[in-house]
Length: 69
Image 1 (cartoon, rainbow, N blue to C red):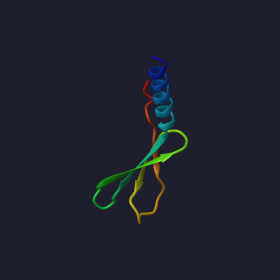
Image 2: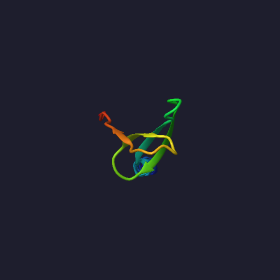
Image 3: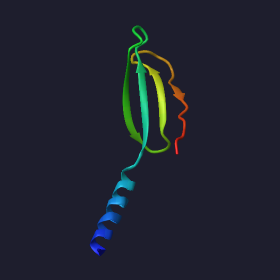
């Protein structure tokens, strides 16, 4: 029974360490309005950015995320 508890505790600690914040970047082609996404693991809070696809020039717009419990 002691080994089972240790295995469960190790699994919980290992899965908690794997959780990271994610940045999702949605690129939009300005001519065709076609979209594609890139997902990046970054430190800090989760973020969603909408950007014009390269080589377009312009800033990215951050979209607010609804927090779920």
